[in-house]
Length: 396
Image (cartoon, rainbow, N blue to C red):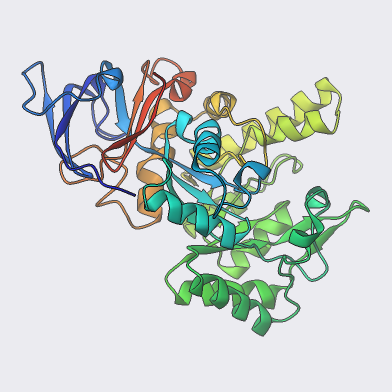
């Protein structure tokens, strides 16, 4: 993306330098695409105040949503689509909620890479995009819930029938510029059963990805899917086993923790799907509460949580309920902030450049209207989103 060069100041009533650091009040000085300094107190800032609409809020590091999809019609034909249309779509789904980095965990890779290229060239105002491109599925195992997608896309989805074929697909995806691999370890079918990716295929795909220094995502579906993902040495679970019978095996949670496997919660997705399926309200509430309890145990045991919502598949873009459900599951405001900032930065080995507000870090920032320590809902009350020193979203 085009880089801002002139130094400017951002005033905050409260600044959270990091989830594990006490908040301060003062100014963030931004020079180019980096944070030049953080000045506490009410002393006069030396740089120009050129975005006054962003002043006076609570400043946190830029948010990362580690589970999105660019599969909606509004992102199709990204290479030629008018910039104004794509800008509007990026705003509606992402930047208005403070996401300065997103990880797309399955889409038409060619189209998503074209979208990313236009953002990086400065043609569009959007987040930094990481993507896995096309995901890998079990042989003859596309899930029932994507059957509505266009046939021309479904026909392209990889369903390798051997370890060699899986490794070849991974190498082709990474050569094209993708940033990781997604495996659908288990996929629900129309007859109520789950198709499962053979262990040798999953392991071969993971090994081919790790050889290139990239991370592997897995869609587990159920408890056995998590066990299979562990056996394949995946790095990130794109969901908990939503709706799995409670309690989840505690030894399995500890195994995930000890293996360093991260999880994106996507808690809002569960009531969203149950509502789509017209599950009676009392049953839906019980199932959601069971999932919250079990996910809360995973987080309490020290399981690594990466904030993610599945927007793009889920058409409810507003993450307010996700924040509320994370809090209901037992996560504190600062744990939620870590899942949005420092934890993904460390997971992608970017802890020295992203996730905190400090001199020399990337100038990726979010200005909130109110303190998230007072209510988890305040994480979604975004006044401005700043990426690489440029305002990519302003409510005004």
